Image (cartoon, rainbow, N blue to C red; front, side):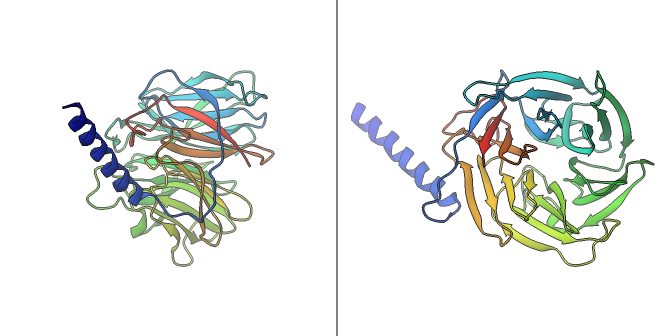
Length: 332
């Protein structure tokens, strides 16, 4: 009886391994993922860090989908020791915080709204853009603008001194928001930005960045990383270019030469994509919690350390395991 049970379990595990291995992206031979050290971790499963920003003093700001909160995290100077994390702000009339971007030195724009877990179901019309000013002795938060027509606001990035861009993951559009007046309008839309048909989780255009007159974006359920050329008003002046595809991209960062580091959430990996479109595994894999449920990436001011936020592998537990949300550091 014991032998039969063992054989049944072995067959199950082998079948699971082969099914999963078929889904693992192919990377260049000999490429090893980088080690990562935990900077800070929350205490309970089900927590979810969604996005990251870096202050001028090197401290991190992290948003949470599972709570309408902004956290401050002080990395340790010793990689073998955990940093310190604390609640900085709690936003009223919201369930979640999502995108964050710096709009001036130590002044940040933050997306807040209502998003239900674990279904990732947004409440259309609930999303508001806040500004958080950290230049004084105490943080000051105020509403920049509500976007009542927004259905699922997620990523946000500074486009110019006057404009922010905000992704709408349900509507499949990118909004422009005037920082001074609070006026908003649709800047960009494309079929690749829509949620993929037939998917339980309807997340389309997600992460956003701007570099050299291009808007770069990820579209999560369509598994697309792309860019589109724009003019000074963030209006498209050419066709969408798909840089690479086949990964469940979430948020990302861009370096000055166009190299991207992209989180992949349910794939539990951090991906490096060269400007040519060549793809490398940079950290983690589907069998490790190293960057389990990776959601966002930031880089320190010296450009020597990547920080990765996680959701603790809630979407795709690693060999049945989840963990509390965390921030990890990876040296470049």
